[in-house]
Image 1 (tube, rainbow, N blue to C red):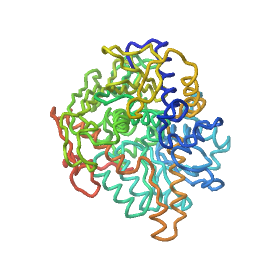
Image 2: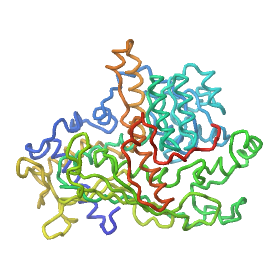
Image 3: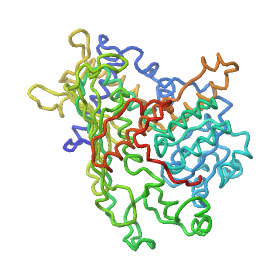
Image 4: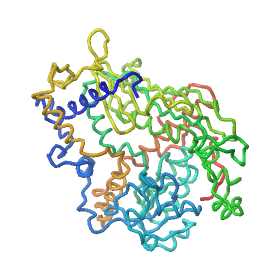
Length: 546
């Protein structure tokens, strides 16, 4: 993520972050111990799953022996990731639905040495006997009354119709991001959840990443000073020939390494070609390669940018942006795709002193603005994807959801890339970053605490935790037997409808700014579920059946 960091400097930055986490957790200068920071995570036996449950506030004992019976709707790429990461002690899949034969097969078999593990590796070689397969989710809802919840990993244009149908059928819903194809659909989903008293969660998994949770606590402590700029990116290079080469039979163009234009399997074509119009698609390409077309997808901002801007808004306290400008274009590809292959957007967010009141109604300092830049391109992958948060006293870099690095700003504007830092108490007891000439004593203790708090093994991206918490919320919801108890027991997922709608508004308004080549100011009523106001009232999807 940071262009010119050596491997040694990255190791120093990672150690700096661990020391900062440990100090804030109470492993260093006690004067900067922070509230109940990472409650219970600093025990010597802490590991990621236990730590996540403690931090995010859910208990295995509440679902032990009674996992939530769930169905998966959409067994493609993202559905495979969710299956591979789910914990069957919390969420037990009893049915899946997908119209493509290849997806029905792959969801059981998985992929070797891949995050998409497949049902067999989780439920055993006889998984097909335990999990019923459907190609029509409405039929599944009619026949399997035991299903309590659904996980939706369909193409974007089907999120809202399927989620609303499932909630009306009495099922709790975890739907993949982006929440919906337009903002009106987001508001319809929120209203349906309220009307049916169902839990609605949206899969922006960074809300359940301990790495981002730690990063947020470091930012909230003030050690980075005032945040003025965040640079976020997700760059890929699809200019290389695809494995096997050849040409796309539909376009005649060379096959390139592009996950958004996968080959169409003969088995899928044979099974579905005659049903394309009935299903509401124009052709097989639109069904399989739905991300490439405006009617079925939302482009790079919906698929990738929404992750990055979600992370940025988390770091900024989930404040809503003020305005967005941008440029996007079909710069590289010469095929029939409709979405941009390069996007460059600039957001204006309010800084911590922009508003003068907690309700964010009165502007105190209109010049206190945080600029967030985002780019996603398809022709260069020089930098790992991630976010670089730049403050007046330090810089935090989060790389590929797996590593966080912290660096101190030193006098004279020289960035301390090679300097180990610790967190100490400054004026008024506020934490500050200080250069450390040694890793011994308090610094070593703080780093040990930080490493323990962050858990052992690979860093979780949050998929497992979001599904565990979803199941926990359902079980707690089911304990309520009266309206008063429902109010008392009601637990919301960390990324519930209103939170996810804000992410959708950010991504979809950026698309609008790029399309019209204009600066768009965000309106507060767009973010209110009860309001009919939306960024683009003309954005109404053509009907495509689920």
